[in-house]
Image (tube, rainbow, N blue to C red):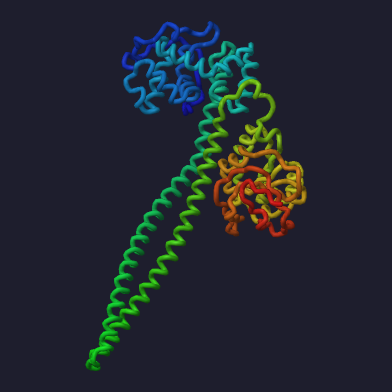
Amino acid sequence: MPTLPVSVPLFRTAAMPVPSSAVIPRPSTISPDDLVLPARGRDRIWELSPNLHCSVVGTCLSTADLRQLFAKLNDPDARTASEHALHGRAVRAAGQKEVAGKLLNKLLDKRHETAIRRFAKARTAAEVRALWQEALERGDIPGAYWAVLSHPATDGPLVQEVYGEVHMLSHLVGMSNRADIARLRHLEQELGARDDRIARQEERLQQIGTEREALARRVAALEQAAGRQAAAPTPAPVENEALRRRLADEQARSALLAERLAAQDEAVARLTGRVEQAEGQAAALQGEIAALEAALDQPAAEPAEASGPAPELQGRTLLYVGGRPKQVEQLRALAARFGGVLLSHDGGVEDSPTLLPGLVSQADIAFFPVDCVSHHAAGQVKRLCRAAEKPFAPLRTASLASFAAAVGSMGGLPQSRAGRRLSGYSQNSQHCHCERSEAIQGPVRIGPWIASSASPPRNDGEISDAEKVSPGVTPA
């Protein structure tokens, strides 16, 4: 994604001269058909402003596309060059009306042929802008971006608008992923340190076990010696007393080693439980990050699939209670991309708790992050949802990734009894609201809707044992 300022000059310009050191070599294996350009009317990439070349290459082509392009141009390190180096060569080639520039233009037209055909129906800048907004809501950014910039009806203000939206999308993706990636790396480091400690503990346990076996053999030898002494003529009283003291010392040492071994076993069991818990948290973070990346980088859809809201939500209304106030607009934008409408309530910090019944009545489902919502607000949402026969879903964290993972895999709303709760948490899941330790473990994967009518609604906001159901299991 580009990170240049949004002040873009006129977007159509003559091809600018390029220094000789930046010229892409002309290969001898290119056929005349590879250099055939599209019918006149749409702009070629070298006719666009140089300030747009970086964003077009970074947004509309993948690294694999660039490697194939430069391999076709007989670039010697096309298969081994870094992604940044390939990007820089493609940006330089975009400003040349030569073999490399023509092949790059043809590759863009081929990759985004569907979007180009859809935008070809537009005759004015207003029609092009309307098609761009539809593509933006569907998440079809790469093809629509190239189709808008190369369209003959596109004017300067429209280029400024489209470039600015693509520019800000790059910041949105980076900002939402940065915190989750940092937590994932921290957990991976903790897992590595705990594995090292467990390995050292196991090595020490093996050493203690070896010492214990040696002591047991020594005690057995002493007992045999004592037996032989008993059968032999009675030795002097001084020798018998020394042997008894020695045997008592060895037995006490053996008992002490047994206690130490039991303590080490308990320590290993505790560390093993912590490692399993950390692995579950890491798997949950990886699943949420994958869901967020998939939500923000959906592949292009066919025109027949573009009508109507996104299939995940189909125009449903979501209620988000708690969380961070500065993140509400991002959550609302993400819900809109999935085809839904998001209502929000801060859990009673500034918004009145009396607004919750009305919001729950308008929503089809309620979400609340268990790490950033008050105990009272969480309990009130559960009671209201049970009374209104609507589902609710506790989220693992208040991050954008947790919300995307929950919304991105939602199925149809249920048609049965009240007090429903989304499944997808393991049977060992625990939940917390601020002062209560209730952190969700395991991957957050919203699947079928699970009825929790096996136990009556509780007034304290707790989650009953009947609600803790394994994924894909519907209680009787």
